[in-house]
Figure: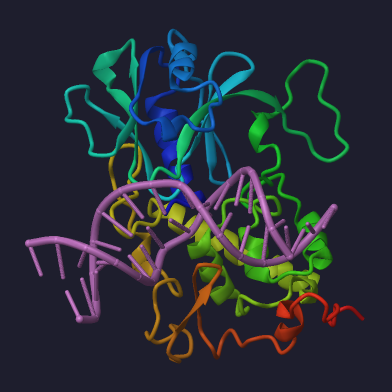
Length: 313
DNA sequence: ACAACGCCCTGAGGGC
DNA sequence: TGCCCTCAGGGCGTTG
């Protein structure tokens, strides 16, 4: 389940193995893999042929390969997507969706493999990525990103991530902390695994109201988000079911050091209390009931419409 | 405008 | 053996 660290590992692989290479052909083997490319697979292929990839970039869980000035190939791995560099004579993977071959064929081909087809590739114009109120420099040197992900917030490893703005957004929200961590328009790159890990480290219950966090708590939480992501990056990302492998097919092994996710009925590594799992948004939340006590104001946030905004003062 | 939910998809695993 | 159910879950479109 690729989150930011896994996607960054893939980005680094693409930086090493795809940058500067000229595309000779593109084979789209499943239409869902290019569903975000409105003009369809044939158009996608035709517009890549003869062009050259630049250096792969990333924002949150999205990554993209610049493709001549102003355009790029955007990739999202979804739940089970992989980008692999494979020898041309390697047998096709069972769930091979897209094959990209290069002029220097001996250096291998790029394959998009995706069992559950939540991921995909698409072609988009790039637009300037601006800070609020910033004007693009006249010399065209502005940082750019694909137009369709302009709503994706910067991720917490981005030096330009704005902690104060994030905290202000949390205070304005009438929601709970885990929902906010997973909202890619507030902070990107965090998925279910790293949300649970960071909340465990921070000692925060997943249903803690966002508006109840002090600036200090927000800063602490962001520190834990960064720590757990950096720890995962250091070992090449998380892997659970071998669906995730990096660009060269190597699995990460961060899952061995998870403290919360998937640890139902196992002792908390801090206090020994048995960890719990709770159904949450059609998925699960793992937490320690002692280190992460439920907020006493929880009922107010989950109250049905018409019962008022009890939390407001 | 904001918050939350449903859907897309496949394969593993459990129950019978 | 095989069938059916549940689970995994990111992001977007729809609903409230």
